[in-house]
Image 1 (cartoon, one colour):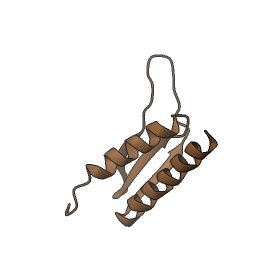
Image 2 (spheres, one colour):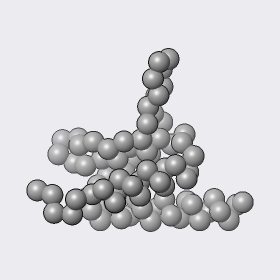
Image 3 (spheres, rainbow, N blue to C red):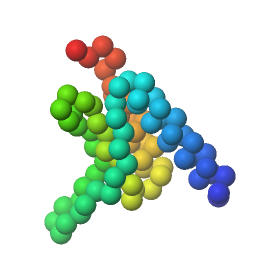
Image 4 (tube, rainbow, N blue to C red):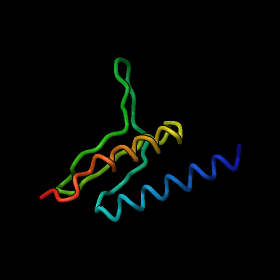
Length: 79
């Protein structure tokens, strides 16, 4: 079990590195929740910089899946 967690943490770090190579900032933050809604990991632009916010309370596998999907959706030659 510990080995699997280490592998997942290593995979997440690889994906964060890949995002940096694409000039995408990845932030792992506690996304606040209130009654009536649930915040999710997501992607946005802040002052012209692409940013991916990962919910640090989400399971590690979910963080990896979201980040891998977001990077796969990246359009390589976006202007």
